[in-house]
Image 1 (cartoon, one colour):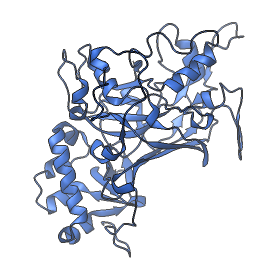
Image 2 (image 1 turned 90 degrees about the horizontal axis):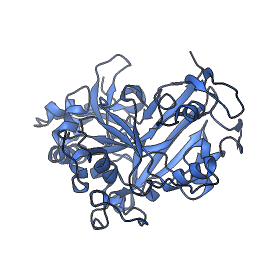
Image 3 (image 1 turned 60 degrees about the vertical axis):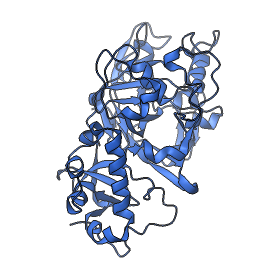
Length: 411
């Protein structure tokens, strides 16, 4: 049965962050094993987008009557805009109300799934504050940033198969670790499990191998964004990341929101990145893009077991999503529909704006004082939740779907 309630789901409270100005996409089913369908969030309801499209005779029914977002992602920017205009009309024009209402389901009554099939996953390191904090922590006698950091967006290739939807339990990983005083490495569950507060970019339109995607084509390829938590086992990572990059310390789980916010919903939140202090090579140089900025003003809140521990500001990120995409493809690497790339940990200038526990607790030396006990790193049973909003049209907020995960003991 479609959702029903005493109030009309189409009549949302004024200023609802998931109103018709937002309309993020996801995939839902009625029950864990039910048929998966593309849904669009409207307040505390989910619109069965494919069923509504069929009922209204929409030419986009084939794109929306799917078990995943990938066909819509691949359809391209013109289709994205057209579908968004149609959806806006379906939920705002009075003539459509009676047709649309039966296809609205209460959010609490459905099961949400990973909204797209992840093709490749790349994670960047785009916050100067985060990179500087880790540099000061681990290389106190050197410059905090490595010489290449302000010349290119540093990143590593992650594991697409372990990207999971918000709400999925995260099993504490095992691996090798070796502390400074240990005579040899040992094997066992990580004892320094951490979070990374990030934003993920979801690629729609692919590119051919041997070509590159310029800065100006960013919005032709990237469909939308979501919150992302790149769980990190710092002890495993520290031992294995010599001389190459992260591997088992990162590849066990990456959580993403069940809702992908289209870039078109974030036009009012676009902002210029911080001033560049080092000249950039032409393929990364965005100094002439002042009328088309690729930064976003996102206000993020991180909670541990219901207690707010940080509020990292995304507007201060040194590298933008457009620059990350340009760098990721400049060597001719191809894009595929469903590619996901993360911003890396988001950290601000203040202590309450740090996006990882390794920064918040200074590698465990200054544990967080929480009502349920101290935390240097995560303990089994801990629940981490990230929420966010962005400025929207006319002063309304655009909500981003939360990403949450609970740590469970090693199996």
